[in-house]
Image (tube, rainbow, N blue to C red):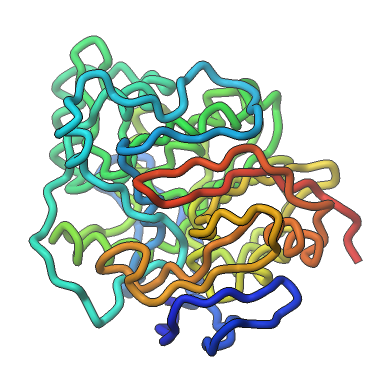
Length: 374
């Protein structure tokens, strides 16, 4: 569980100086160490009785502003964040927002109360990404799956021909897809903060040799607060895993405990997490130890509001400043700041891929490559 801290918006340089007072980073997230192999049959979810609070709310998104791409990206056949032609300008302005997804995310006690939201209908943007994984189940099975899982984070295409999709609360991830390999070619893949597992299953569909998906499931309290829905944790992942007859290995584990996996990976996905942990440098060091020689990390996180790309400063957000009812977005990073931090963590540096702006919130997407370990 992330620890609440009081701060106003400040910036701290990569060397550690700060423009204002802030609680020192470094407190760990909740000690969720259990590893759980999800049941292969719907309804048979062997979860421990203790209450792990949630895991990965993901990036708040809306199609209000197009992505500004300053760097070329490779792979994929999706138009990143193009305005949805099926929506009027008024509908685009009022489209549901996607929450930031990360291990360790929670809603703070100082909630800014607002009416509970209803899960949004999938738009053409969500369907375009969902169609990358073809499930094609029958209507009866699709209906049973939709009834069994009370809330979805990711949108999945259960039956494209009949337009049956899960109603994922995550909005428009088209900007991520071109940065993913079109063919993983037998690589081992780790998806950190997987939630319903879309990217883990996509890696498997694109010929990854082994895929491990981890989440500490602390998203459950966040889902309860925002949508009034109680989740067990992992039921969406289990449902899709069964429909696909997938071999993806799901484990309930905290990001800071990844060394317990005892293996390294060729490709690591880390989406929407770094800005939600109090010790981002510590997390990067853990990830570096799990990266195989010659491996690659695809990292996406919240960007600094001033968009000062050549500065290594890190913005510090006040509780609830970035997203309402969410006190656990701590940092806004610049590419230069991520590069400096990555080098401290043992990577060769941060390779910037894209700098999208989603619902007026800057994002930073890039790659980390393995350097020599001490």
